[in-house]
Amino acid sequence: EIVLTQSPGTLSLSPGERVTLFCRASQSVVGNYLAWHQQRPGRAPRVLIYGASKRAAGVPDRFSASGSGTDFILTINRLEPEDFAMYYCQQHGSSPCSFGQGTKLEIK
Amino acid sequence: QVQLQESGPGLVRPSETLSLTCTVSGASMRNNYWSWIRQPPGKRPEWIAYVYNNGGTTYDFNPSLKSRITISLDTSKNQFSLKLNSVTAADTAVYYCANVPLWWGQGTLVTVSS
Image (cartoon, rainbow over all chains, first blue to last red):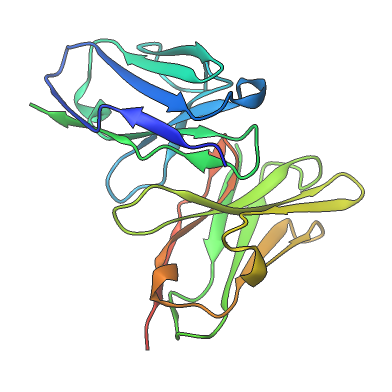
């Protein structure tokens, strides 16, 4: 099983700031099948990025992502109040599909 | 617009079988990977299994749960289902149906308790 490790665990930032989240895989992610999901409290996860760098429909362009192999990043420019949430990376190129432990983005 | 909706009991007794159904609208049941994912309170999501149909039906399971899972697909009803047997309190979670990674249902909380 591919283990995904996200860093940092928690980030405290202010609206308007820029943030970078990291996801490292224990093995290379096949086909770059790496997604980033946002989850607000009490809500289902929502896909932001798939295929390592493709923005999902309706996702603002302040969200961007890159990476390949074992190292992936998600960048959020100009944080909005609604961006303060939990973020998970997920790989689905190898079975079993797996999720990182998450990064919590909180308002400073 | 693709929508997924989970349905099933919110309370299951220990040692019994958890049964959930997902109804899909806006997407073909064929040539799509339909998954079940769960998320225990305060923890990361955990993928359970998927079913895929392109004429024939294939399945894949999380090895940690494989012995207790049955997953099925009914293309005529645009539904797929999950059965998890011999449940314990550790199976308490929000259960989501999904088409990884793009579409998620809203989730349904299943509590295992007597």
